[in-house]
Image (cartoon, chains in turn brown, purple):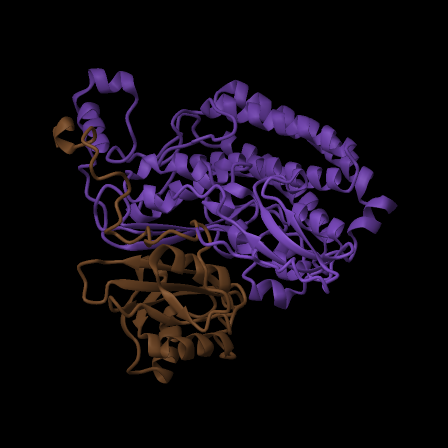
Length: 167
Length: 403
């Protein structure tokens, strides 16, 4: 795919952040790993400014919720090195009750709305964000609708129960 | 309800005035609200409010089987629904490890490039309208109608197409569809030429658009822009070339880039992209003729719904039909990101699957949402009338903005 292989990329990340990164996987050729929120900005800065890697393009920031897990909320970054044509995916998981994350708006202007969207739907508070408000939902919404405990439909409805459909 | 007072209008000393542009202003072609602070006709600062047609697609998608998510993608960028549909099918195919036959790839390229042309026709036509030239819009709009007729021949609907299925298409293209595509290829170039003749060297149009809202490549990349508006700044990032899908790598086409990223450059880039799309369709038609005319989907009975007459007469088809509808087929427990070059830029699908019938998490990387966030900051210091055509040239589609 790209000009640098995932192995090279992995080695240069490990050389700098040996103990801070873990759980390397490669689903469909896209290098994925985890880190902590203490290191995320250092890591993003390194990936962006490294002369060889040049991950200058922030594709997306989003989040995911695993209610069963010890650290249920995961913030997911997709970066793209346009010069090398390589993508990378970074995850940082946060404990319930402490969903704070440092902002990436200092690195990319485009992170602004992506973080607002993540806050709006998952309640991740991006510390240092210049304008952290809800973006797609109404301002007076009290819940974070993409979390798994928030039902899609009215839970009191009975006409869509599984037993009506033999399930 | 909490109200946000964006700008304080009650200060008697202030000479600035506040203007609510939208949410339903006729000049914005969609539901966009921008609260602008004006000094005369010049914008001092602005705040965008979005989310007026937010429909919680990502939440709904977590409760739908894969094949029922296609109609949701229709309603993202509804000016080029087929690209969204194909992007979604390809994401699921990547997840399930399905390889599509060459003929399907080429059929997809035809339909995606037609959609790109339809989208650019609307964008560039409306840009003309906003600068005061209605004629070009009317010439071109007729051909968007012809493209919609081609969709209709292929899938039965026109705007929200729900075209194709996981693994290919629901039915083969019929001869009328091919005839209509050929007729379009034959007729459209002269119209596009006429359209370009109306605008490209038109003094009034150039005065209105040149150096308006010029953006540097650095700014554009920092704001994660993609698509024609990024290429207008001179960055040649096109997903079709960088990560070819649907055998785009076998095709001969060019990626047009602009020079200084102003409205005029965006207009030219889109026009040139239409020419390139025509080239792609032409080549795809040639390649299709070399393939067996019976193939229009991959051989994946576990995921591709069998035709109804077979369901009623064939045991195996009935079993698969039942399994697909009831969602009893195991899917891999993994995650996938797939991007296609939508008409507005990189349209990405981030799908996290836990092995069930519906996604554990689905996130749409919507180009309009990401492209639009520079709108308010870049409007600073601009004339109000320039900000209007800047919005037209960004081609922000409300459905894609708000998901």
